[in-house]
Image (cartoon, rainbow, N blue to C red):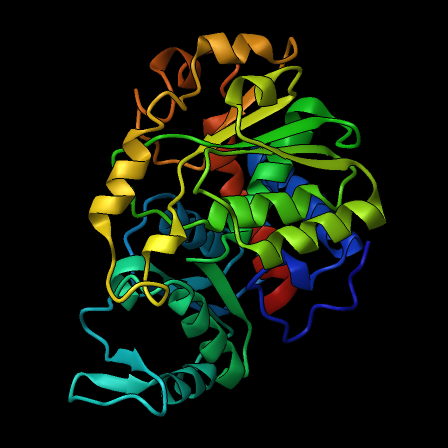
Length: 347
């Protein structure tokens, strides 16, 4: 276990953490889950405070962080973004309802022990990458750890819950075939954060990774390059294809999730091109995880989704509510994985 490298570090992307450090998070997450199930106290963060800033709505993330801090003996402050100043950078035009991120971060640093932030989409005018930039600006000025609760690039807390669930359900990760597949959803304005975080984690654990998506839904090339480098270093494989059926053949895990086509977003375009997003998605409505595709996978394969899902679009009810679905185990493991992350960073 790697226990001496955590002080004053931020949690923005798992690319910043070694395989050994990710293993430490998993080890602690399983230990904390066992202690929770046995009703054993584990107040590792007694009297410590986490500030939570949600520029986007949340069910699982907010409640898992709040419950997690309570179980660790601390307290999570929910900062209503409608009641605090809007974040701005030093060079931006200000109005009376804004405040420099530098000032907000340094103020909160004097009062607590961690700042967690969710920011993407409408909160930053649908400008691709701006949510990640906001979180990194907080981290630049904060003297306490900044935790990424999801931006338009990354969702590292979800990825740790995902890999924890796969390990819990299937055991040894090495050699397992993970299919990360795009799936159709009527709402086309979704970040790439889940795929951008699941693949980097899986690629450090010797998994056989298949990325499947229709033309036009490519992930960021820089992220893919880093994933390939991980595979070279840690083993396994990485394949990309545009055939969902072929991808699902012999899978151990099918993770079917919608994401957007960033070529229609700002700053690549002058405005968000919603008609073009919808048109591209409508051409690929057959990309759905149904029982036929689950039957292509190995016996005992599991279905994952970060939730909320678009039922009857991304996945059929018989799959998500069926015996191969691990989505609610996955949702529960958000609590335990995040408790491990907070305990290590905020101790």
